Every structure is written in C-alpha cells, then in structure tokens.
Image (cartoon, one colour):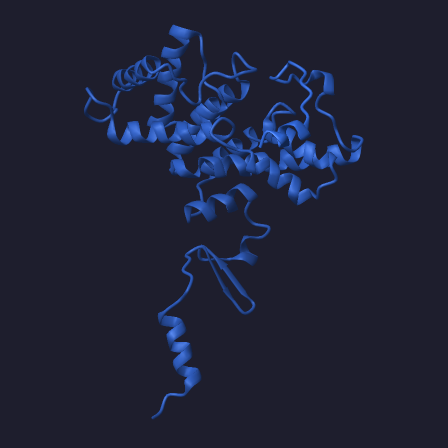
Length: 286
C-alpha cells in the first residue's frame, strides 16, 4: 500500500520535531501543564504553587508552598531606592508604555542589583556539594558548618571582597531576613544551606558587625527547597514584578510628565575649564 505525501510529512514531523518541551502540551481544546489539565489547576492552586510546578516540575508540599510564597512576598518592593524602580519610573514619566517601563526595570537587574541572590545561592550550593580546600567530608554538625563558613569568610576577607547576601546599604539588620529564617524553621525548610548561611552570618557579625540580608536568607532557603542557583534572578524577578508595575502606574497617574532627577546646576563636568573652540580653526589645521 502506497503511503501518501501528507502521511509521510506527518511521520517526519513526529520523528523530527523542531521544539521539545516537557512543560506544557498544547492540543486542540486541550492544555496540559506538567501532567495537569490547566482547567483543573485554575481555582485549585495558588500562583506560587503554579510557579513552583512550572519550575520544579512537581507540585509542592503544603509547607514548601507556604515557604515559596513567603520568599516571593519578601521580594515584592523596596520603595524608590532600587535602580530598577527608578529606571521604570523615569521611563514612565516620558510617556513610555507599561510594558516598556516594566521591561526597562527588569533589564536593569545585574551583578550589583538583583544578582546577589544568584551569586549567594551558587556559593552555598557549591560549598555543600564540593566543600572547601582543607576540609573534606559532609557537613553534618554545626562544628562542620562553622568550620567551612570560617574558611569562606577568610577567603573573601583576604581578597577584599564582600560576601553576597550579607550587609545592606540601608539596614543594619534587614527585618525581612530574620522573618524568613523564622518561617523556614517553622516549616522545616531550613536545611544545610540555610544553616551554612547562618554560620557565615555568625562570623561576620562577630568580626564586622554585619548581618544577613534578604538575599542571604533566601539563598539558603531556596537552595534547601531544591532550586538551582541559576534560577535565582528569575525568582527575584517574579517577586519584584508587582512592585515595579505599581510604581509605573503611580508615576503615570500621580506625577507630572518628564521627571527631572536633578537640576542642571547639580551636574559636575569633569572639564571645568571653559574653552571656546573654533571649528574653523580646527579645520584649518587639517
């Protein structure tokens, strides 16, 4: 029996797909996400649970769901102090669209803003997985964890570097961090990564008076929840997005357009000597 051209093309499509995904299957009148029909998820799970399901591929336990929800809430907003919020509001004052303003804010995330969570998660996960030079073996006791924490602190101090996740430019003690640690203890989500972060904090506070910030707390908690460090900035973005949207809306509805951050007399020019250059004189020299 001859195989028609249309049948051959369908076979080739099945054996040579251009895209592969295990997240959501789309068929006519059917949407299945991680094995669950989306109409069954709607109205039955929370947004944090849906985000957890999408990222991790499984439904969280009740305690893990509450913990992840607390993490996202903790990132919601920090006033107009962050560069991302300032960028978004400045763009909003020019008349840019909501999506452009929000995109501008998210694109301003980098190593020094929003990147600390990811870097802190990476440090904690690599320490738990690989240990440190001069100390081998699993981190089974507070003594083991404290020993590794001491090596890490010394290494950063010797290189004159700050440890991401500790210290804050506005808060001597970040109130969000202590609350997150307390919730993690209540839900049993404080594993070895969180304990290591706390040990680092102990040493930093004893030597420098520095305490853990929200990134350090969430780095330990998210790592203990099983999130890979490379997801850190993405999780931060999920938490911060509502705050950025609210700032853009406030700027558009409450403030006059074309916001000025500073006046012209507040601008310092490096070349303070006033020079009058003649274009004709420059051209004659050529």
